[in-house]
Amino acid sequence: FHDLREVHEVLSAAFAEKLVEVVKISVSTSAIFDKPVIERLLPYLEMIKSNFKCTVNLSIPPPADFRLLPLIYARGVDVVFCDLLLVDEGRASMHLPYRKNFSTEEILETLSRLVSIFPRGTVLSRLLLGWEPIDETARASDRLLSIGTVPILNFVPPGRDRLSTVVL
Image (tube, rainbow, N blue to C red; front, side):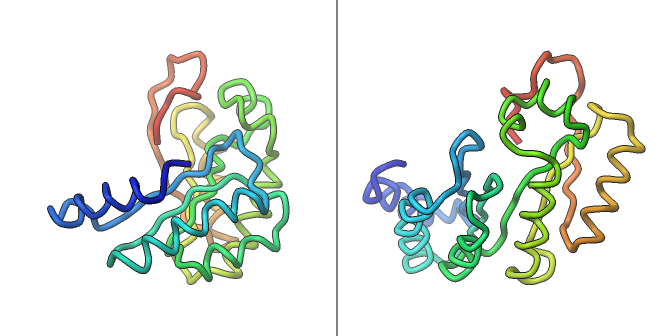
């Protein structure tokens, strides 16, 4: 985490120049999204929501404890991402090393719980086009929609050994 004062200064400058409408915070997919991470995140959320008129997007891995999810909504997160990216477990763990830590079912369970907390249309999950057969991606998109999650389709041309360097 960066120093809270420094983050405030940078955001203040960006807002003064009218460069920002959305602040996106990403929790590392290699981190365990647990109570200590939430406790470190909350002051940033409070600072942003109390000082700036903006939308706050948060990207998270599946949490260690689902009881933590209401806290992020209560503290002002407007939109939350929990990315599925690839459906096939083998393909996902081969191309996305962090997915060895999270199964497809864990991600879908997280999304289902988020949908029960956040307003409709504010829980999103990215899917990658071009790395799996299109029918698998289509089924995953349908599944996301069926649980109330908005699928975001990103095209990343195949050809890399790993997707870990792709910034979405």
